[in-house]
Image (cartoon, rainbow, N blue to C red):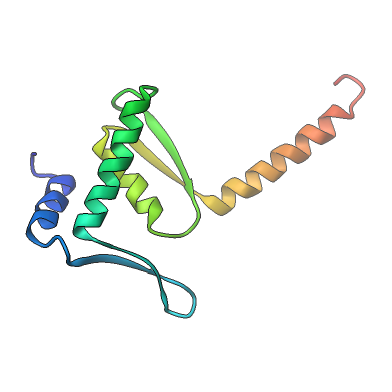
Length: 115
């Protein structure tokens, strides 16, 4: 693999598989989830494999990522990159607000006389 962040992560996973890469903490500072280099590499490979297996995406396609706070968003981001896709992360909160507004507009427009 060429010199890239994926290549660097692959090398680190090979050299330090059990070393802690990242920890997600709750508001009290307690660990909620964590990844070692090896477990992160495995998770991103699984995500990339799933995306490629679906056959619905071509290299360079954009993929919207809307996740609640946590490490899974980072895994999905790198899984997309590994699959040759362009990850587009959006705020999960903003997506929920958008969905509610859209539902409200749809409900309001259905009651109009020309609807």
